[in-house]
Length: 302
Ligand SMILES: Cc1ncc(COP(=O)(O)O)c(C=O)c1O
Image (cartoon, rainbow, N blue to C red; front, side, top):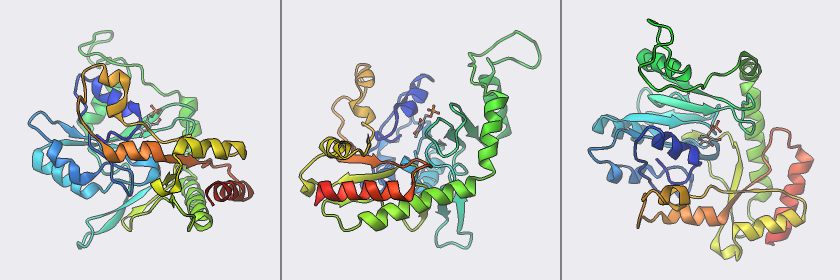
């Protein structure tokens, strides 16, 4: 799994008595550096967990190839990437755009309040494997068995979603195209207005990716002369709120206290954590607010 992600990814591993093994980030997309995954695979590896960071898809074909080569499962975390697309099988006859969430053996989505589709809290797991789907339904519901009521042979959870929440989510699924269009408009509008500001690295959309800009994230180059926390403070003084980037799993006290990641180094993740932040990116952001944000960014950096 990438070190640069939310702690939820590592918790999922640890709650299942498995050991998270980390990979550094791609300096362009901020997603897992797929070129560094193979070196981390051992005979104890069971799965690869790519995470589509901030709504930009991971380059999934090489991940799937590795999974096939080493007989691993792919757990695709699409929590931040509802509606994002990936050009699979590039240069082959069956090249095609596919949605994030269709590329893992299991794919997960979050419907937390800040996501593209939200049910307040909650989420979804997708799989094409009927046996896995059955198992997930059982785990979600306290591992009740169908053959004998109140008889349990596995530790389960109450991960049930209420019907009310599901209805709220389904209403949004009907307008997913509009939601994605709005987010892609926001991404293009920010890039158009912010390009050329010295020291400011804007998000890049790879030709094989359709970014949904869950968050419009930027990174300050060392040449900018300030780090993200100083930048955030300067923007806050101009009434623009921002949020910091993730902090790598390798730096998390709760994980290090368990003896994990001793002596390991993830320089790209460390750098982007220090130099990155995201700008206001909500669905309700108006064009004039976006203009105001860009003006503040320009004022601070030029
Ligand atoms: C990449 C990623 N994975 C997992 C999660 C966890 O989702 P939830 O908050 O719905 O448990 C989030 C965000 O909250 C996320 O951004």
